[in-house]
Image (tube, rainbow, N blue to C red; front, side, top):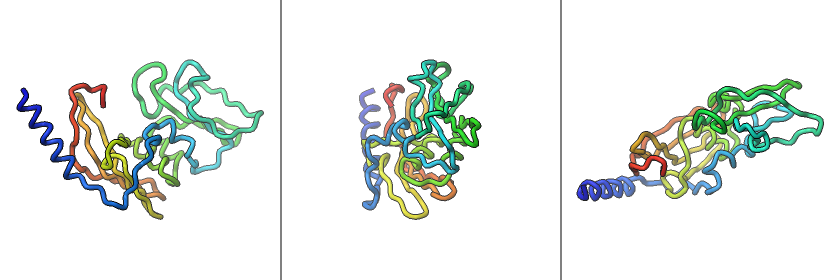
Length: 201
């Protein structure tokens, strides 16, 4: 058993050393590894009088994750959808969704694809991370090969990670997003961590 563990550690270190991040990539700020901190940076593709991001928490005060600026007289009272994006579980406080007001009518965005449509053109790094998250990629700022980015006029390129299964497996990816279309392409860099304790990843 000790031999297997030692071999796994050696293999992980070899993979770790083989993933090279070019020098022109900057570190993704630590705060951007949490979806709740990304929503305020969304610049919607269309003009909405008002929009808010909510969870399906039964307590309304806790359900509101983010609200855009809104006139005092405007209120939206709509039922919670049955499903949303970033579904974590079944039941209370398990997913998020967007409720927007356009032409005095409420509009839902309650799937990963609808969130991409709401974002539209990728204007900034938080939007790029949020869009990548809709495809299952996330930021791990403890490593450059899972938490670095560069941008130009046409693309965001980011080193991100995916965690899958139990035992949980972490893998590094180079993700490129077309800023105009939102199209995402990903290239595998290799597995860099495995953990029997699935909740720790």
